[in-house]
Image (tube, rainbow, N blue to C red; front, top):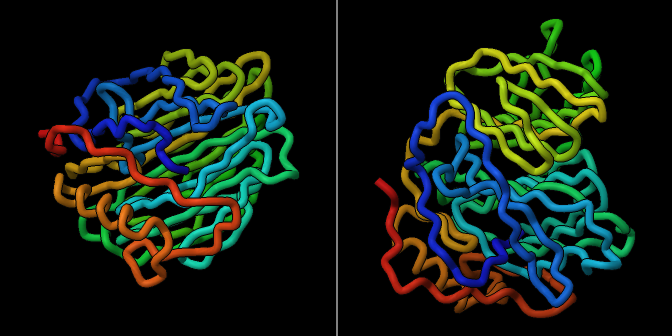
Length: 327
C-alpha cells in the first residue's frame, strides 16, 4: 500500500522516547484517495511513537462496503528499504509487482514484499470483494540489508487452537500454552513477530514473549484487556521490553487482535512517502529516480510490470526543509 497522504510530510523514526510500561495509541483517519475514498486508521507512525521494533507503519481499514467506498485502488508506486506485510480479514486484493509476482491477498494468508534497493507494485481490490477489511504493515530493513534485492513471498499459516483462542503466526515465532510453538518460514532481516489472535467471548490467553522485545497489540474488533489497559477497536497498545508473558482477555463479544513484536530497532531512519533512507540525500535520490521512471523502466531502480488500469502514482513534492534523522 502506498502512503496516501499528499502533503509529503516528513516522518522521523528511530528515536522514540521510552514511556515505560504500556501506552495506548489512538488512530488517526487518513483517506486512501479518490472521490469516494476509503478511510484507513493509522496508528504507526504516531506522535511520540514511530516504531515498535522494526514495525514502522500500521494501517487498519474496514470493514468497508466496496459499493460505497470504491474499494482499494492503488496504482503502481515505489518502495525502498522496507518490507510490506499484507493481511486481510475479509475481501480480496490483487497484487502485482516488478519482481514478477502476480498474486491475490486473501484472508488468513500472508503476502510479504521485500523492497530492498527498490521495487514498485500495485494493489487493487477485486470484483469478488463485497467487504474489504484488513491491515497493511511495513517493517524497516536494517542498514546492512537496506539494499537487498527485491523479493516476494507468500505463506498461509495454519491456525493453532489453544483453549478459547485461535492463533495464526505469520512472521517469527510465538510460544503458546502447553509448550506449543507456532512459527513462520518467511524471510525477515531483524527478529520480528506478527500474529493474528482470535479470542472467544470472555476467553483469556497467556503467551510467552521475548523479554528483550517491545510489543504492539492492535485491536481489530471486540474489547480487550492486557497489562491493565483496556483497548477499544482500532487502538494500538505498546508494551515496553521486560515482560516474559502477556495475558490477553476478551470481553463478552470476543476479540480479534494483531500482535506485533521485535527488539527496539536501534537505528535512525528517515521515512518519507513510500521511501526509507538514512539521510536526506537518500530520499531525494529515491524520489528523483521514481519520477524519472514512474514504473516504466524495466532496467531502472524500481523495474516495471504490466498494470492494465492506468498510470503510476507520481511522488508528492518534498517539504521545504531538509529531511533529517532524529537524534
